[in-house]
Amino acid sequence: MDKETLFQEISHALVEFEVEKVAELAEDALKLNIPAFETITGGLIPGMNEVSRLFEEEEYFLPEVLMCSDAFNAGLDVVNPYLDKSSLEKPIKMVIGVVEGDTHDIGKNLVRILSGASGFEVYDLGRDVPLDQFIQKAEELECDMICMSTLMTTTMDGMKTVIDRLKERNIRDKYKVLIGGGPISQTFCDKIGADLYANDASSAVRQAKDLMGRA
Image (cartoon, rainbow, N blue to C red; front, top):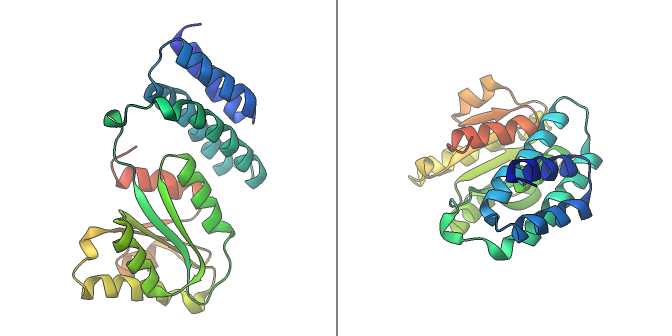
């Protein structure tokens, strides 16, 4: 089997939730001396990109995304020990959480799952997150992005507070700030000075990659 066909089979098996088959095909790639990095970028990631598209078009839902994520991780576990770390780009690191006062976290969880499966290094702060904790963790972990979510109009202003505090500490330029949630809009994003607004998990991941030059 040639490399391109193998990559297509990996992507297809991933989209079809075939966890064991993805792992077996990843083993086949190693036996063919295909670099682990190429298996990830040529087979696994394109598969997850297709999952993101299916989710965005409401052909797949959370259970399917989770099963595909399991298949992705199964393949990753096989090739990861063989990665030449020098060939890898530094992963995009983000903190993500639901702002203080809000406990609705389904949307945030979807972004976390898709981001992690797309190669981001994601640190989930959970829900009802104290506003300063977004900044403290981003600084501590040397993150690239701060992602905040809320489904309540009463907690929206917490996002502005985080951005204002970044400015007060003269570290606003260190981070890209992504916001989302039911009451959030592009107008609100522009008003508070966030970098990115997304109205669903798939577009959040896609736009974040674009913003960081990893499309």
